Length: 278
Image (cartoon, rainbow, N blue to C red):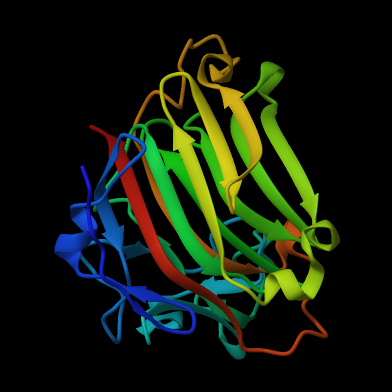
């Protein structure tokens, strides 16, 4: 099939209609879901929900919907340094979520849980990420059944501490976390010049393998049958639907120190698209 796409070329984005998008076919795939972020204001509530509060990894940011918006054809996730009372605070608590008297950073995490999940397909995102100290942007998936890490995790794009990561996680032996990880230093990618540009991340996921790419360069590939949880359950978390998460975290266990970083910081997303085999 020959599909003609007529595009208006702007400095960083391409605008095509929804009908044109869903007519697209590529490498035997057909587009089944996308967000082009061409509306102004809040992201599409039929496609995205939000995580809220302090969620994981002892990260510094409080997640809230207010830090995500669509403008000029982009989804902007903005991390801000701003102080407000922590509504979870409990004096003397040892819980990292409750022992902080104040919220010092805010950001957003958009999720498709409750709106859409997929098992297998091609996933694409075109985005520009910030690589300053303390920034921890990610585009990733989690399985719908079981709790983490038994539900499985795929980090299609993850960046922190001068390193771009492509990760796949299942439960390992003796209650360990079995990570299949590749790491690429920002200097090898091109440093600040690379980070200033938009890039395309992709996952090809089928019954045989999960393959993760940036700008069509393969970063990681793992056989699905090797990813059975090693807890005796026989459950393979990558033979079930996953939902996606899109976030900009700050600090925490891996993100680094943002103390001397100027805020606000932005993760800018041109589009997210999901393709499935015909």
